[in-house]
Length: 235
Image 1: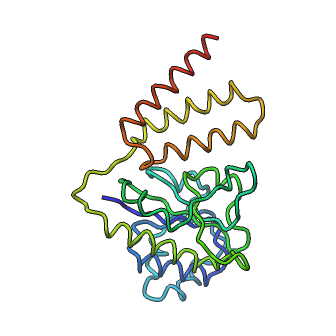
Image 2 (image 1 turned 90 degrees about the vertical axis):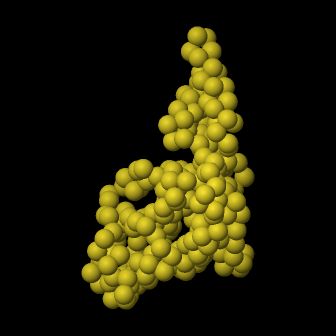
């Protein structure tokens, strides 16, 4: 069974926080994590209306890493378009996520940033997938609560359609961590340029996101990477 964890990073303003707490109730979010919130939680309860208990139950943490513990995949939203060669800004349109979401089991983290500046580059790099809500080029950014509403609506309706009796296709977390570790070490050996190393790690992080590969494919990739790493160590 898939569970959803909504992660709000540095949320600014009681209105946004309260409205998002209400959205968490609207769309059956299982867990709400607040990373270093910059809003008065008690004041935000007024805007959460009958979902004020969501703020009482929210887990408050200091770092994004803490909020992503024990999750299968993390998806963050950003309005910034990709720049040439910047893989960190390569995003997946939100409308294209459903086929992937249908293959995931475990816990999905949905990460949203600040109303003012969104997520930092470092925070973006910690997420498995970066999604963009398709909006007009004349005005790409949305209000935080509105963005969260669209994202939760998409994920909620996708998961409702999933046949729970159908086996999930996913990459095991341990297998995924090993493959990423090998990919990171190989990139450090091959590339002197830090940007190329970073882009390589981001690429493998995306490839190894649960749902992208079937388990036999993930096993083959893990074996391939481990053997390359062993050859490089032997020189």
